Image (cartoon, rainbow, N blue to C red; front, side, top):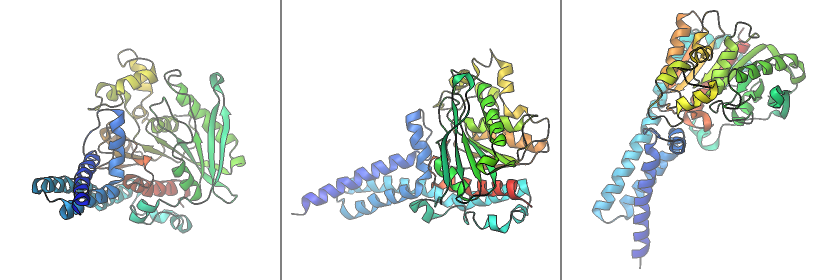
Length: 400
C-alpha cells in the first residue's frame, strides 16, 4: 500500500536533484544568450536558497530512493550542487576582508572615523546578513515623488523621481542613473536601493535620459548634465544640498555618471559610484567578452552611430578612461569577476589609471558575481556592495 507514494517520492527526489543542479550550475557557467544570462545573474545571489534546494533532494534520495544507481546519481547531483553553492558562501568572509582592505587603502585607514557617529549608527553592521537575505533588507520610510519633468530636448519629456528622508531637512544629494545598454530603462529602476539610501539621510534623484539608437551620444551625457543643473537650481525645493553631491550609476548609467563627473566644467561633485560600468569603449569594441550575450559591438554601434573604424574619435571621447588629465572626484568601482557584459578587467584598468594619476579610487571585485548582480536587492553580492557603498557615500558626503 506504500509502494506508490514511495515511487513518487523517489522520482521527485531525482528530478529535484536534477533541477537544483541545473540552477546551481549557472553560478559557474557562462551564459551564451540573454535568456540564460538571467539565470547566471540570479543564481549566485540566491545561493543560500539554492543550497537548501540541493540539500532537500539529497535527504529525500537517501530516504526514499531504493534503486541503488538512481539514488547514487541523485546524491551525486545534489552534492555537486551543494559544493557549487557552498563555494559562494565560504568565500564571503574572504571577499569581505579583501574589500575592507581596499576601502582602507583607497580612503585611508581611519576613513570610518571621519564619518559622524550618528551617520555610522544607521549603516548596516555586517557586510552579509543571512537574516536579511531571507526576510529582506529593511527599507524604512521615505517620501517619494514621481514624474517630475526636468527637460524636454527634441520634444522628449525627461522625468526624474525623488526619494527623500521621512523628516523635512536639508540632505546630501545622490543622483542615480539607470543602466540598460543606453537603449532602455527608466528612473523607476532599483527603487529598493533608492528608498534604502533616502531613509539613511540622503535626497535621491533618479534621472532619465534619451535612449539609443534614436538618440546617439552625446545626447545621453547632455541629458545627465541638464539634470544636474536642474537639481542644483531646484535643490532647496527638494531639500537637497547641491554642494554635497555624489553620482551613482549602473552599467551604462555608471558610464554616464563618470563622464558627467569627469568633465572640466562639471558642477561640484564629491564622488562617483560605478557599478560595472564601461570605461574604455575602443578596447571594449576590439575585445568583446566571450561569450557575448548582449552583442557588445552592436550595442556600441547603436550608441555611437557606427563602428570603431568609422568613428574612432567618438569612441575616445565617450570613454571615461580618457578624462584623467585633471583632479577628479573620488571614485568607487564595483565589478563582478564573472561579468560577461562589462568584464572586470576594465574596472581594474580604470582603478589603476585613477590611482596612477593621483586620484582617489577604490576597486571592489566580487568573485562570483555577474553583470547586474544587484538586481536581487537582498542577494549575496548586493549586500556586500551596499555595505561598502553606504560607507563610501557617508565618507564622501559627511566626512568631518
